[in-house]
Image 1 (spheres, one colour):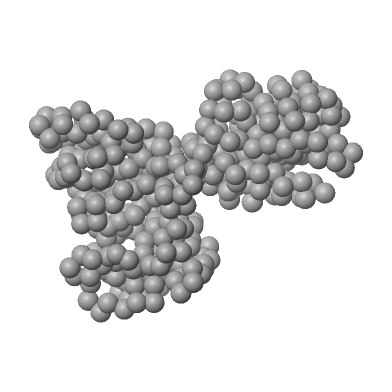
Image 2 (cartoon, rainbow, N blue to C red):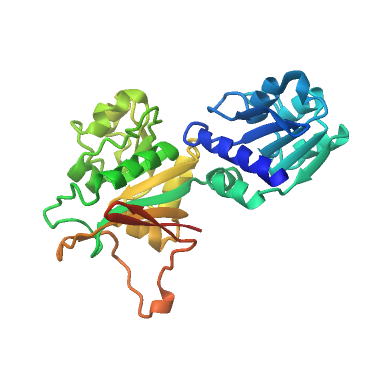
Length: 357
């Protein structure tokens, strides 16, 4: 029965996808005498935690009940009061936790508060599944470095565009719809300057109630056009340009800053992906969707910095065209990059290869 109720809590937790970053997705279920008396999930960043919703719904029925929660209840004052104290106050008898919270502000303290109050605590029910749905949070809270997820649309022969830079559309409508959900799920989206100039993307999550990501452009020489969609949408304060510190006092840099675009300055002109992500992480952006182009994707692979991804493949052959990855070569097959934990998705006549470390 513990697994059954924890599975429900996990499904509730997933409802927070894209809305709670950089917080974790958490679900909670209160059960008494075999009856579910309270349910909840963390709905938005800064809002009440899952346990609060579930316990408030249960009200007096929470006394003597069992609480199932996908992540260790918090033990500190943040944007909300500590959930562990509320669990004590509501006189929960038993608390079943899928996995402990590695956040240094929690890290076993929530569990200890409950145990010290005489509450029976069980840890590890559906732990693997709980860690899987919060892999972004678990990396960011321990490393302070964003989770990097690759999205790429290619032809069967591995091209992202023709030699004339035409790329609309390689994949079908169903595959492109999935991409909009990815843009909602991850907190930032990153492209190189050539992709911005050639495609003039909006880099938004075009789904109902979607949350638009922070738009990050890697632009060493500050070539971003003022007439681009990227600049025209700057009023939402989600535009970020990664550029050389040589541009710091330029007129163009000042104009971008006046348009509410944040500039992150780095030394030189050839930035490592890892250093870029460190700077992005300092802005409390916990995850980045890497959408191209070829140079940036190749650099991320060479630095072994990609945590996961989804490569969409259309049944089209260009022959020529721009490859989605280049700049390195292996003499032997055994030495090449091998994607891990692979699964295949079907989008009508398109497929994708999804993977993560």
